[in-house]
Image 1 (cartoon, rainbow, N blue to C red):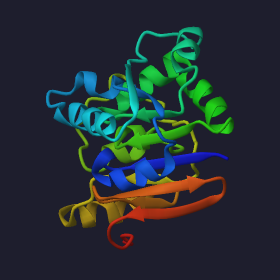
Image 2: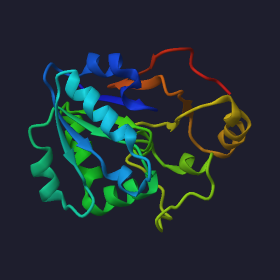
Image 3: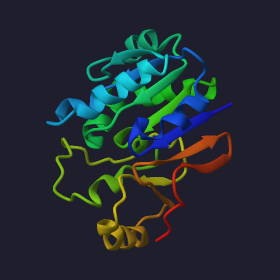
Image 4: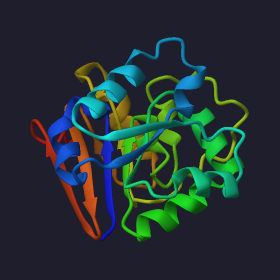
Length: 205
């Protein structure tokens, strides 16, 4: 069974994450996207929360790795937890390392994919939504924004009412369905079944 959980803010939906992970799961904790961020408190908070929940968490940076190295590092893991940060830097590392190829293979084998913000964005067909609320964001030279296409829709994370008009306009300009998430929500994909989990109604704009 393919299981993908795309979150806006990771362990803010701890209950949903714990539901899908086996007891004492071994988790590959991908920290790459946070390397270029100044404020990385969320990386430590999520790591600690996962460990307190009883999971075996190993930090892994995919930047500079190749497919063989990543296969070795990810071997035996029950879940791949891709943290947030800069989605362009993350996507650049994903493509250079072959992480995208490996993840598609692992998900098909039943390994759980959990994305947080940027980690959710790269699971989509494109990460174009990374520009929507911050047009001057450093894209680290990325011009091809094609994502891993683990899901057929886009996710817009960290929704606040102040972003309503911006997102409304961008939805009109994209070729994909857009699922909007607050920091207390996530999209769960189990095979072909897609559902909103967490707190509150789904935001429709």
